[in-house]
Image 1 (tube, rainbow, N blue to C red):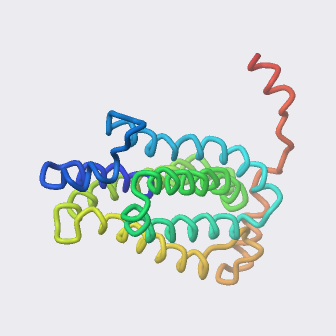
Image 2 (tube, rainbow, N blue to C red):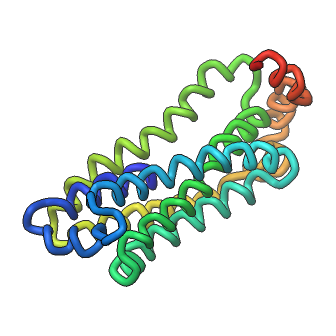
Image 3 (cartoon, helix red, strand yellow):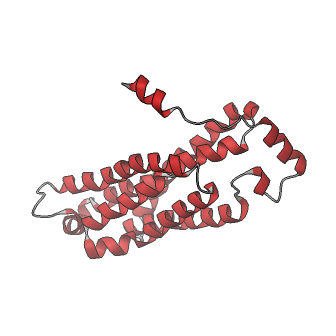
Length: 218
């Protein structure tokens, strides 16, 4: 969701009736085209996400995956709540910093989700449920893009887009805290039969052949 909220907010801010606010937030003397600042703020998310995906991949093998995903979600929705306030004070620089932070937190999501899937999905269900889990990451973006247009046109304006995504992040974090677990052995609400079935059919862990990967890339 946090991937789509900035795009929709910028669309709303840059409408003609918001021209004064648009210029105040995104215009600086050092960067003449106002659109450049929007580009920098948008790109910051993806650069941070790319870097922290590598870090997240390593940490997901060392730290409890539930904890990593929960921290990522909490930081992301808290920053989303703070976005309207920080942007009104620090203007486009706040947008840039916020997108860096959210990109960093979202960089942990895919590696952690893949790690959780490897622990929870039996081999015969991997091809069916694996793509469904990954599609969930993009379903949230599509939902945010759809709701962002509706919210931005309402009385709350572009601020409500960030409050809405923050509320969704809060609800998800609460649900995951109570119902999510790093492995079947930690889960209290599934039967022993289910635990044994998952543990017996999950493929064994292997060390990533980094040297071979590097060799074949170059």
